[in-house]
Length: 188
Image (cartoon, rainbow, N blue to C red; front, top):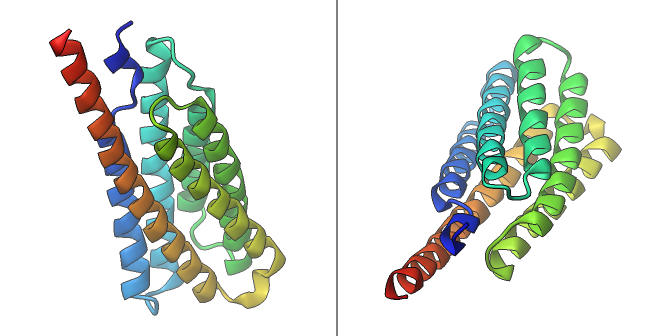
């Protein structure tokens, strides 16, 4: 296996980052939109992001790389997306619990994934920090569930925006590493 194959694909981080930014912007620009629409958007985001995670983990597994945390993260996203999309009319509190649970598990799995990743330490730190932010937000949602669905959705929007920015930055850092490795391999 060559060195270029062991580095994560930069565009997967970019796509996930742009999806997160898009969802975060929609939530922040239209905070008074109906809760139902925001719940559907969140369900779609979790489902699509989960599918990307599963696909990427399968690609990593086929190369013999560590993939388990990323696979669990993807499966979690798909599961939460399906639950939210199947029952969008459930009470606001139930949605808050589902989102909080998703954030905590997602955060822990991102932290684990940061240890399994290949690439630079800076990229791994950004993924780990993003995971830690998710854990903190999820715990806050468990502690203060009555603070209102709009406040919680705004927090989730901010989280997605920050996560999207981090993932976009990570994508360019990974791309730079890939170019360096590809240039080194071609020169050799």
